[in-house]
Image 1 (cartoon, one colour):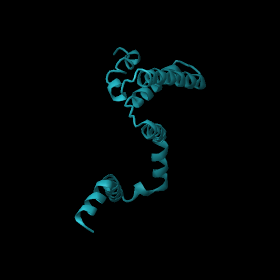
Image 2 (cartoon, one colour):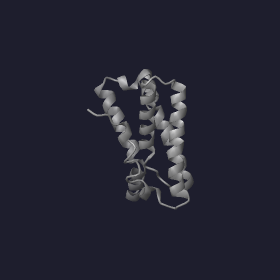
Image 3 (cartoon, helix red, strand yellow):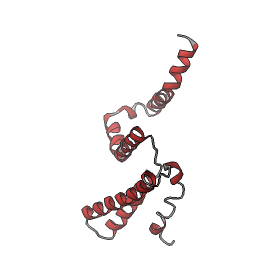
Image 4 (tube, one colour):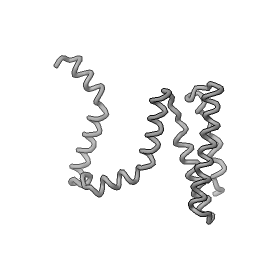
Length: 140
């Protein structure tokens, strides 16, 4: 292989190489516990929402080339609202419907600015959700 082919291969696969190295490191550190099927199942179950969000972001990037950085803050906001509703005694299914409606409303508001006003998503993001966490803060 020539030097440029090796360099190109390394540039394309750097993250995979690092992932494998980290995986091997922890496999040796924890005597192979990371390789147990129960551990893999736990990792997938605990990060299922991240996979769902990543799938949605992948579709946004592939179809329009846009990256919306506010997805995480909207998920956190709707999750916090749902937690407060359920802690107050609301039925779980009604709280989920309200959470979906809030997320849909925020997404529609953002989509209006991005699609119709033509504000680029990365320019529209800063400060867009600065007001969202405030209603959820409680006095110490």
